[in-house]
Length: 572
Image (cartoon, rainbow, N blue to C red; front, side, top):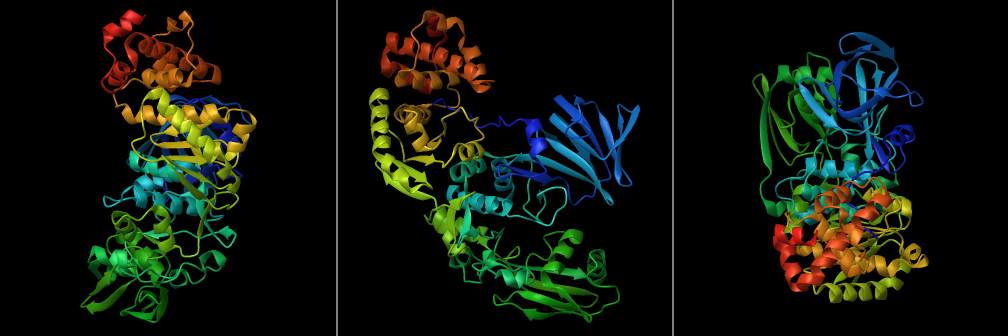
């Protein structure tokens, strides 16, 4: 029943041991895959350990330099001791650096050797990965609903079986989904609002892709990737996008020398040097080029775009929808759109959101026939709206609990004297593992609340344990309190008022032994259920004393403005 703040309680060692099988709750991300690094440095940024196999005894991490050595690894520890191994596993907080770039991470890291380069893979929860992708791939035009649609697509892509990599599931480049290792509040909110949802098509996981701008018409999947087959792709058709069209011109042009193009194509093995002419040989239904002729050599237009992007920059050939003409020893490209054009158009999605469409409607526009389903089973997520809240669930039997939710919200309003400022979203998960994977909360937490969103363990489970009414009231109170609080409102007061109005505040005098500052620390970083319980009870004691001595109206004013120091001293 306690509120849980969004942070991972997954065991790092457990993540390492599970990384090989990559269950749906975690994903292995390849770092710096475009650089092909042969040497990296790693330094502790706090408590950190390393080991040379999953079953090996961990050792304290020191400053090390790891190098590729044929098919294995060698590293220097503090410039003195040289060791070798086939893999290196890092846990804790550390800093990794190569090619004049550095990252500070806390995710389990695995380093192995592949032909010609080190393979560096971080293991993190899927939902955290989705948040990082949304933060990286979103733009200034995005708003909450378009970000939610992007989160669903990013999650659906991540959960697809294979992406062509060895040693990890997805890379951090645009080959898979671009990822930068810092999130944002907007990306976090969109990820949490859609946690546990992915796209499904006729009982199978749907293929999900996105791109920046379709130029007014999306591409069919078989235009861009003719070798890919399967039911999951059948709804990715070419269709006019009126929303992208309404945004305005997306035309572009680029002049590239034949020498630069020759080098780019040779690097990727697409065409030998010596060709003189370049033309579009075939086009797809959307009008995009599908086959080019470099001299007499046929080249996939998508392979051409990617080769030029990797060698010369992604702002040169922005899409496959172009015309090309010779200009002396160079070629002039004139086109429209940006990206491969398949699936969700981010420009169109942002415009749909601006016009008032929700994320479900956005997904229906770009993935016709697909349903929004629970990530593991595919059971469709349904929305049931009642006064003041919306219940989202993939279990049709949860409709029976709507009266319980209505009573709990009414009770929370009566006890606090507050009313919701907007619609509260209550998201009920089908199982404890699904709840834990979506929120990253430990299994002993019954619910998780952030802003106006409540995530719950299975309603049937809470009801069977006679926890449903109390949990619902408690979480509704969290929403009501958080709507009144500010960034400066101390955590102990926000949590304490919920405890007091829930009827969970202790009246025992010894509860004041903890100072408000100590309570804040324990609430934010509880190491166990017992620690969390003690901190919540202490916070509830303080809040109840404030209510007893000064009344609800005054305490609500302090919730918004802060409790005077002399008042706290008097209570202690």
